[in-house]
Length: 120
Image: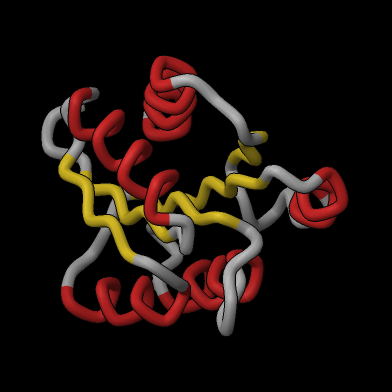
């Protein structure tokens, strides 16, 4: 995907590293961070083409993060991930905010394919 930059925010280290590695293999420039506040700090440093965020995180959750990013960085596309059905429904009610909501668990191929589709 020719140098597209992706910011991955997930408080679970194993998920964050899996996603970062998968997208790196997919040809993306990936910056993984542990939470919403770290994501905002990274966005203040440089622009990203896409934010891939977990919905459930401590302090600043993925929905609050997405609301802030859509307002302050409107060119950044947003994809949300969740393993919780009620949180997925909450995100689906914000269709104007997220380009996609991905259910956990997902495969390496699935995450790369869906991110590529959003960025296409």
